[in-house]
Image 1 (tube, rainbow, N blue to C red):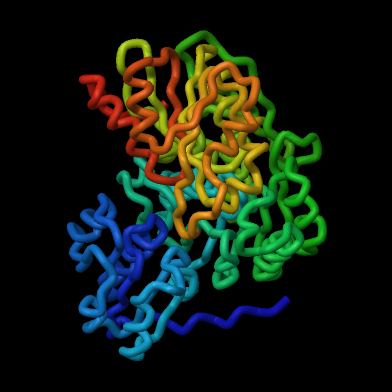
Image 2 (cartoon, rainbow, N blue to C red):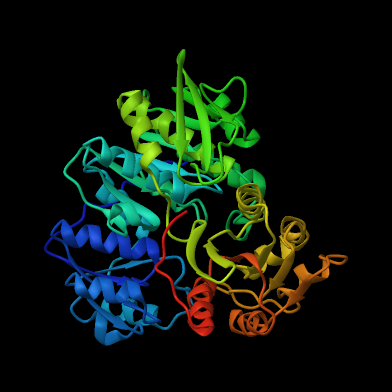
Length: 471
């Protein structure tokens, strides 16, 4: 393994200009650095609620990347979403500004605390949010940077504390997590994703193994025993390993309990750990989430939290925005929004709603990335097939250029034989169809792009908006 270079220490005399500051990871880092006394500014190509929140916090932001915004900067922090071909890089070079990837800046920041990193193909945000909330609930006062907004962390995607631990959601998509120095690590799962960067599944697995190798000798590696690749990595790791999941040999084993009467908690489970039996009722749906929270229990107890304190955090945790989030209700239709953008996530979310509601489910899915859509169109179709009605929109491009012949139609074509599957060019077009032919039961908007705007748009168009809450 090639050891990554230790990031240069951050300098409080410098002004750091963030390119793409409105992104969820960038905005969290900017806020934490700002509150730690660093001089921060930033720009993004679109106006957003994130930009307005940053501005309200006293951070100078602007819409559009321009040379003028760089004139007072001493260095640039960027994200992989800013393409190498963007003209702003010519200005950065002309001005002679050092440039740091977000992960380098975050790695430098994390070296001032003990870092508990959460990574994996699925479940990172819910797991890291629950870990941060559990530590805060127990009085540990952590700092945390999360890939989603968390109602119980004051509605933000970060929290700044004085305690020794920093919770990091570690992104494997571009390998940048190798810039971190984890003291404890949780791996939820390792699946075929982000191959547009890694190239092959073998190289992706090697990146996770390299990340685990950065742990200090006694740093705990917590891995899901239900996942083949995570278990294989843990077996080869050679250090301190703790497993969790439904598997009979998991160190923290999840046992589902029968659901109680209608209206009771969404799910009840028992956690078996070190000879103890801990029964709990969870506020977020889905057995996959029960397993994620068991991972939190495993890591929290591994770093010294008493089991009952860890259990109290799990019981009180209410989830993350855009993770099975209740948006509102119009008559007999309840609308939820979910970030799922991989077949495994879609399957898990649909299974959770089917178990919890029993009624018809309509899904509007916005694919994310052309490369992922082309590679997994058939798997997306099979994951969506259990829904009573499916509308697939065109691809949300994010950081990729369009690929000829690749659109949401690929998924619809593979849904042949489904009683109600169709393509819509955009979520707005899908909204107009649903307004003409309203479904009943549950409507799920799914995807990692701007489809999150669809639920509120529909409620306004239907003439009734209810206050959002989590279920």
